[in-house]
Length: 479
Image (tube, one colour):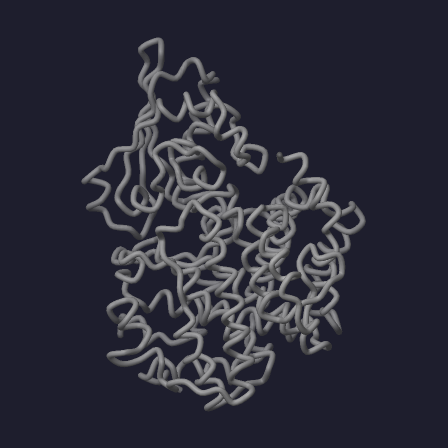
């Protein structure tokens, strides 16, 4: 069956028709990895001040006890609020997975962080419904993941270049699709849910490096859940909201690619091809290749901080525009500062949770090293296109040596150099250290690897709701 030329109708038909049997063993395996990775990020993200403010706000507002409140010590809140907090926590450290694409015409930043919006929505709606199997959760998650990625892929890159944050805007549709799948929406009600989501979708790039950047993803999860629940109650919207002159694609992105649209949804599922990358560093994916390249130089030549006179970083606008802070003064800005990220590698030979602490970023050693890093726009790299993340490093040493390295476009964590399952587990353990007991860590890892055999998965959100005491201890250490 050929896909409909109407984008909204194609999305509706896909959500209605996809079944668990359509998910290949490879798709289930990759999705389980993404789930485990995201659960770790929910837990470590609960320590962030932004998430704690949202938790306090949710408690102040109260409401119907639909779903467990992340780090809420067993408290429950309305579904939308639960999804907002879960989604914000999942993206709070900018460590969540990233959609992949190798199209020269595409802006890399246009692609989304695909797991957090649909998984957050699916977990919350599963608990709202009260009896959802692991297979149903997996199907809802993959439904939202595919809808989110394909909309992102079909849109013209002008969406991102105008300043929209795709994980917030397009992520709303992923969350809506996941929620709608579990709620059983079909036909007109499903189209209306998508229409409501189209008007909810928001997020602007000026807020990168602030608390509001992860809130974009939290709102995507919240708005997707809210859109699906409103449509279930009979709330209406334009049933063709992704199409036409005033539709989402045209208004927010200047249109879409008809050639890409012809491929349709699920042929193949994006999670399998071109795939998804799981991040080794809690910073923008555009920075990882250069960080690894510098780490290789530092280790190979046993470079000490005092050996470095200057670091010159050459890249195109697809990196230099979003990674915009020239001198980071806190841990949020550091995630979007090549100066800060490269300085971490020189000073600590790593860039993990221990480095993304404001006391370290604002300290004398980091401030001094950042001032030795210069970012330079390279027209030759710009002319190569944006289907890969390209950059190169030139190190000027205090003893007069000059070291150069091209960043490997086959970045660590991406489909061409994926993390092993053991490495994904190790990242989960790092994220949950001090937050879960070893027994809890082991149980959660086991449950997620075997998710499709679980009769009722609603207990997974309860686990996330009971980390408040541990979160308090971690926050005290971080201060």
